[in-house]
Image 1 (cartoon, rainbow, N blue to C red):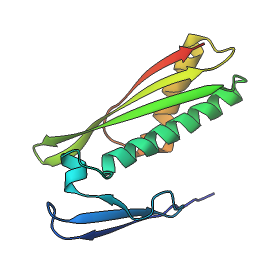
Image 2: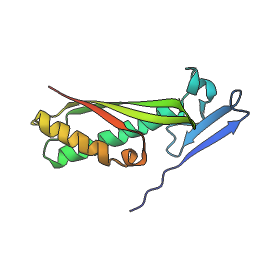
Image 3: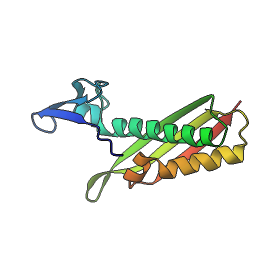
Image 4: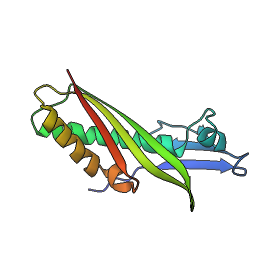
Length: 143
């Protein structure tokens, strides 16, 4: 099976004064603004790192839900935050790390099994495989 998803970007102007708009094939984003100021200066709009974080958190959480369900421990709730670090390095800017923070309510799960499956999901979700930066994970099983 092969699935292809689409996102389109329109950009006008130079790097600092330019403006971009991101549209996703699903319509979740429709000409959503982004630009230098939203990426580097904290102004309104999105940025590639935020979108990557959303994709990574979503992919990881779905992968973990699958693994927990297959282990006969379907989760009641999983909540994941992804923090993507963009840093200036010798060659320019690079994504140098992704930190995942997970909280989960999983009846019948032991802490050890929960952490084992979370680490497996972190290593094997498709977005994790696409990222070269170190990916860390903090996971907490709640009741």
